[in-house]
Length: 103
Image (cartoon, rainbow, N blue to C red):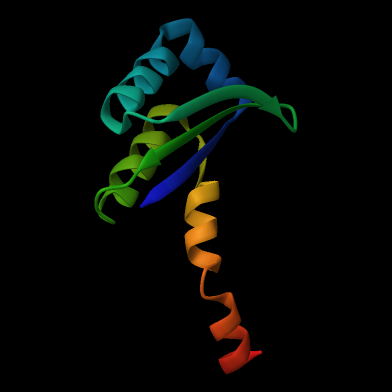
């Protein structure tokens, strides 16, 4: 399942992690493990933020990914299932039936 992982890094922990190289090490390990189709890094609401879109092979990865980010980056973690435009078209293909039955 395609997932979006969003990490918000607290400023002080992020500063220390950048000084020591831990942030780079953890993010590189995440990139190597997840092999994201997209990765973005930006500031949001005054904190460093990372966003990855990747294919989750098994739901057990939720714990693996989240704990790595909690311990490795002291980051808040959001994992959200996402779709491409093709996925959405496929999902909406039977919308008329859904409306007829439930609408």
